[in-house]
Image 1 (spheres, one colour):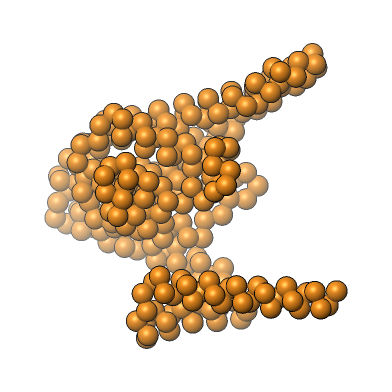
Image 2: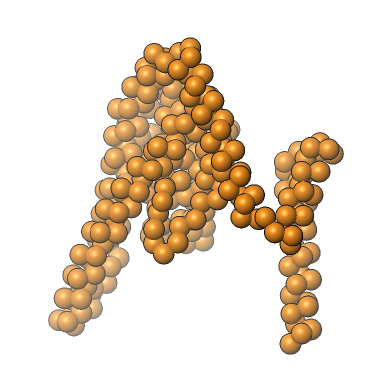
Length: 254
């Protein structure tokens, strides 16, 4: 698949919208947009196959199930992994497991963009301080509203656009040259990485109050053969009822 310049720019914008600090999706929030499943689906829309993009995004999401960003630290960038991983994998017509293998190192490289973002933003704060000392409210507003977003747009859209536009062909050629045992190894690695994400999630819910719901989901999916959508609906109903009972007990205690 050949990715044209307009598609490359739009894919870069998808990544820009997924970065924490973008105000344009206030109803959804950048944390929702940063999920590889969401980014992958939007990339699929741009490349003309949203279903395939969703499949790639879902596969890439698995290693990031237990992703947590605390105190401003970003150990990895699931938004960049979902965006670039899906775009490059779709361009190369690779399998979802290969997409996971591509996406994980890409997500680690995304931390560089985050560090640059946070480091340069400090200079904008000093500019705001100087404007505030001179009682220039309009300049203060202009700096805080436009400069950080313009800079963030440049350091996210431009690199992704260049990689997608010029690198998709290189990735396709690379995967073609790795046919056989090397490609099989990449598939195996891509199959192991999702298990790591699932294991981290199980570790986080390993207590008697939460783990029971996991086993309910296993019974519904494995033994009753319910599709994942039905299991999700049942999970939502259980969560809703549990929340209502918890709130009612809290009110009675007050």
